[in-house]
Length: 176
Image 1 (spheres, rainbow, N blue to C red):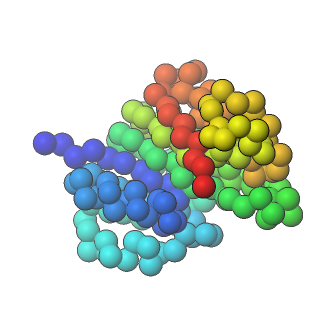
Image 2 (image 1 turned 120 degrees about the vertical axis):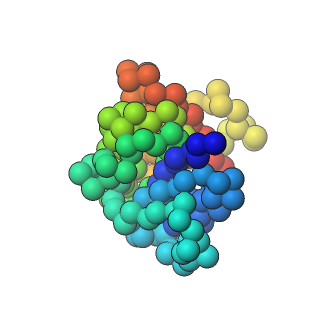
C-alpha cells in the first residue's frame, strides 16, 4: 500500500501539530512547513524519530523556499498564517504578506507540484460581528479587520487557483 504524502503548513502550531499527530498516526508521510514565528518546535518533538515526518523551516510566501516540497504531494492542509485582530490592525502588511501572499505562493507551488487536494483553514471572522448565531455559511461577508480581510482574500486565492487549474479545494471557516 502506498502512503499518502501530505503537507501541513503551520504544522508546529496548536491546531497544526495535532493534525500532524493524526496524519502520522494513520501512517501518512507528513512534511511540515513552518517558519516558527508563532508555532513551536516542541509541539513536534515527540515525533523526532519518526521517518514519516520532515520539517521545512520556511516562510510560505517564499516560493523558491517551498516549491520543491510540493512535488509528489497528495494533500495540502494549509493552516499557516498570522491570526490576531489587534496585531493585524497594528501590522496590516505582515498579515497581508503571510495570509495573502503566502497563500498565493502555496497555491502556485501546489499547482506546479501536481497536488491532488488543498484544504484551507479559513476564518469565521470574514463574517464580521455575528448577526445570527450560529452563523450560517450564507451570511454576508463583512471582514472588519485586516486579519479577517487577509484570511478572506486568501480563501479567494485558494478557490481561484482551484477553479482555473482544476485543483480540488476545500475551505473550512473555523470558529473559536
